[in-house]
Image (cartoon, rainbow, N blue to C red):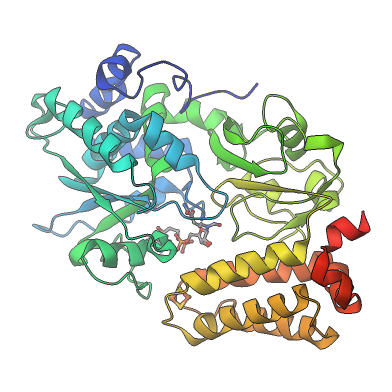
Length: 441
Ligand code: L3W
Ligand code: SF4
């Protein structure tokens, strides 16, 4: 059984409210952190090995240590709650059921970074959650954990919740900052990174909800103890939102030592595939990461079991491996059609492209049109090569990672499931009425 750090109290009735949260040890980590120096808190986060839980897995302590500290310039912490990656809904769970865990994590992190005004930028579609967060903020303020001179330390902190307008691109950190400043959410060129020039050109740390929540158990049990959980550079626990063809969709906390097979088939997690169907493929880190066929998902190219962690999922590189990404775990059974699935994703990325760079603006639309043609039985063999060519021209040639995120699913689908694309081309009548998966298994 995986160790629980973030969700250990999630089952307690009323844990959403300050009184219950506090009764179960809430804000004790904050009290501990506020007695430490900011350097000591930073050191704990560094030692913990915590990596960003939003998708990139960048070391959190290193990001914090990059924060510029020019004299007299305010600094900010911005929590990225614009969780829009298809298949990803773990931050929603945290904010909805454990809002004080996020507020406490923000208090500790803001203290460490020297941010007196911090923000939560939340996706517009989570329309009911800002009220939950604002209520938690008010409760924390009434109890003296936010506002002026917190616990008599002289540290002040205000937290504001900003609702997004429902654009996926605003989850990209610089687009988020543009939107927070009141402009259209167009990504900025990096460098400069937000740690140097972020919100209103001030040094800013942008971190995912889960990353900031994880700071609470790190201070609670110490960075060294946190680093003992997990394996290698995949320390601590990770929230996984599991969906697709599984018996038990939901949000699970894992300790990154379990195998992919255990995660899919054990009753503790996904509980297997409905109706005894076979596993076809999986996208383990949200829609942007490469799809992996079952044989490469359960074993690495060296024949070792594949584990639910950053290194093992990426084993063999993108040609055979995939990525932990945001932990949005999507399972496809033998009846699913990869062409249809890839077309749906291509439509999404085309719709969400901000349009600033030509390869992404034009390429995503082009890929969607070709995939639709193939899916509808109107494709030619050369369309598959054209699709391959387009995705290659997008990858690495855009301002932000949305271009790569649109290219990778197409590349992986062709690499691993070219036979399905060819089936659609060779069976135009059938492909208009049924999918490859249903026709062939
Ligand atoms: C200062 C340097 N800071 C890097 C910071 C940077 C950022 C973090 C990671 O994209 C990925 C994307 C999605 N000085 C720095 C530095 N930083 N070098 O570190 O940066 P980066 O560029 O590796 O990634 P990113 O731009 O944050 C995130 C993928 O995650 N993804 C996520 C999708 C969406 C969600 C969601 O809805 N929640 O997660 C899934 O795979 O495709 O590749 O903070 O500033 N020298
Ligand atoms: Fe906009 Fe796409 Fe360029 Fe990102 S890659 S800046 S979403 S056009």
